[in-house]
Image 1 (cartoon, rainbow, N blue to C red):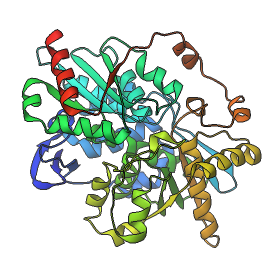
Image 2: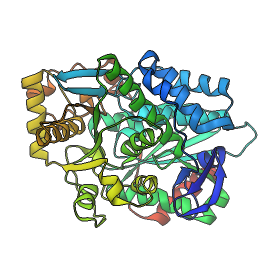
Image 3: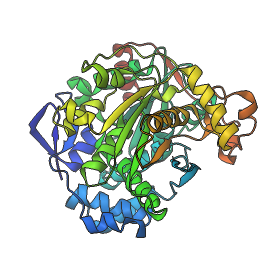
Length: 439
């Protein structure tokens, strides 16, 4: 597998280099130089395969001989050892539940796969691997659990102080061991910018072996494509072939993975980019003007992203052709008030409790269906996190009905471990260098 930088297609590396380097020095993102199209017979009979079998087929096609087949199968079987069921909500609306992994969020697919791939390539005699990750909540928790205790690795997680849920904060800050957490006095965009500055800092990279666990890392993106194929397989078992996916979108890695699946041959009628009021992409689809803005805090905090990193990958998939992209994608935005109303409606009408991100995806799916009543299709909206992770954002009477998993209850008895950080790159760099000299 060869990959190029979105800023320079002549800058190519192998898969192992892309995994550890994470982001090219020219500040682009890595993309496969060839996107394989899966054979039609496999797609036609995909309903006969399990999630793990589908993941191996898709992963093998993309990664090629970069990881031998037997080793890749072992990585997938260990990393993706949970299911992602499609659940019917209405006659023609389904929800893809992606929160059945250990951190109760869809990020488990990418983080667990990536950590196993890195562990596969790491050698004991090599330099310590410093994993940097900016998070608005769920990514950091999944990465922490994915890398916890992995030898020769050190994880530094940055999150915006006071802008994640209480449970997310516990998942981030109570691990210890090789997991270190910084509470940044700023937004997710500030955290992300600090991480990007670190990767572009030649002096720091000469001292430390840095890699990223954000969705800018190609090994995070690849496994997210697996569950789109698996969702389609489940829809085929229901006799449904015409599918629309509604994707709650913040940094747009989730949607980029869906579009990658489409390019590999997954038949999808439409992708819907569902955002909160951080609506950079819906505005671009409407006006043709891409204008990143500072992020605004909402109930759907994982989507509070004003400058989504993975958008360059999506445009790269379509060679920068907005019109071609618009044939396949529509964008919708929703306010906090609309999100809360949707949570109520899902519970009252359909007996389904959704987190704010999931509620936004349902609103977008519902809006698209209402605008296309004459067309025969089913909508699948993605549920990206267990509702127990957002009790502060869910109406109290509904939150009281949520069954809290035992692993969340256990977190409440752990000691919090974190440090404060201003939005100051010099201070962040010094923190990393100081910590390196102490260990």
